Amino acid sequence: MRAIVAAAALVFVALGAAAAVPAQADTFQPVPCRDQAWEPADPAFEALPGAQAFYGSYEGGIYRIEVPANWNGDLVLYAHGYRGEGSRLTVDSPPWIRQHLIDQGYAWAASSYACNSYVPGIGLRDTVALIDMFPQVTGRSAPNRVYLVGVSMGGHIAILADHVYPERFAGILALCPAGPTLFDYFAANGAAAEVISGIQFSPNEPPGDTLGRILSIFGEPPNYTAKGLQMASVMIESSGGARPFAFDGLGPYFARTISGAKLAGDQSLLARAASNADWEYHIDERFGLSEAALNQAVRRLPGDPALRGPSGPYEELKPFSGNIGRPLMTLHTTGDMFVPIFLQRDLRRAVEAAGKGSLLVQRIIRDARHCGFSTEEVQRAFDDLTAWATGGPRPAGDDVFASLENAGLQFTQPLRDGDPGTLRPPLPAATPAPPRTGSGLEAGSSPGEPGAWVAGLAVLAVLSAAAAGAALRRRE
Image 1: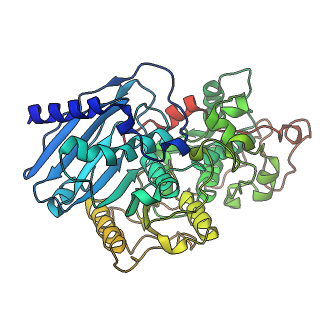
Image 2: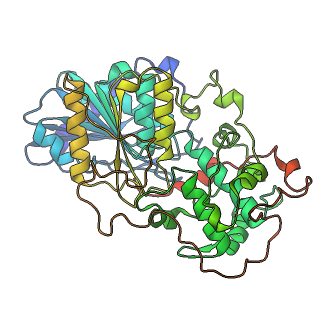
């Protein structure tokens, strides 16, 4: 087997870089990789019984391909999630559905991408390249139909593919997908944290140090202070509202999704593109902070129109246009506070505005984790997608704009232990109001002195590329 795989890899390398670039690459421009050396890991893996494994390297990364003996002629591409900021490139076999794919006769392929970091554009380019690699590496015919399954950042890749390369795919499954407006959420959290804590991010202090001082006021999950509970309420209510497992899911990501990078002067592409200019802040006002005061007090700034606008060079930095061309199904968990479910509302809004609503089906799963799906949930979604893409009926889905307080019962298999978990932060015990800190606002108060907050409305809190590494570090 190793000899076969090595020979296949050599054939591909001999074909040169042109084979690694999709036909449309001249019109799609990804955000470039950092200029550094990258270290490919060994992509070797064992084939499942009844299948053949191919693996190797291409100019810029490594790949895996698995083809069952009873191949049905279709190919499934798998797009992995964020891998941190390190230099080592790795490639995974698809979780949840690998055995199912082989059993059903599907071949699959996956890439490391040419670099790490938050790089959905690079990920899309390298994932689409697998379509042309497949017959060259395996000696099989070109696939009849191609499907794309993406997870987290890979979900961003999947949705982007439906905008940029719809003609290359029969259908797309985006699991817990991130997207451009995720970085608006990180920015919005940073701006809200300033108001609640009374501490501002500044160019004169590393944002991590400032965040440490803010967190000392908020407390650490699960031991939140009164102000920490205010912040928790803002994060949940502003990202979809009370929903199963939301408070349970917040703990691991409470600190990691509060960004003050651009408030401190960051000028990375992600920071420049993000915006909280139109972000609607919500809070359960029983926590002692009024929604109106919060929305008036936060620092706001639009994204750089040279990046976020329609003529910007990088599609991955722009909010989705919704102009998709192939059936798209998404799965999202209710308690995901890392990549929250509000992104599904953003996607639905864009797709409906583009007149493509019939091509999108969204399902909600009751779980506290980011990408916390069961094998049954993902397999069912994949089977429903492929049936739809090959002429079957449009599958059932959830209304993501309905109240989420009891959402997800239709497609959660099985219900998780402790369901529905904790939907919102618990109200603190009746105690005297804590002393005000800095410019933090209590319910019904004015937004403070003009010099403190009104003059600060020209600055935005967004996540920098470096801060993205800290906020997104998780194997997906």
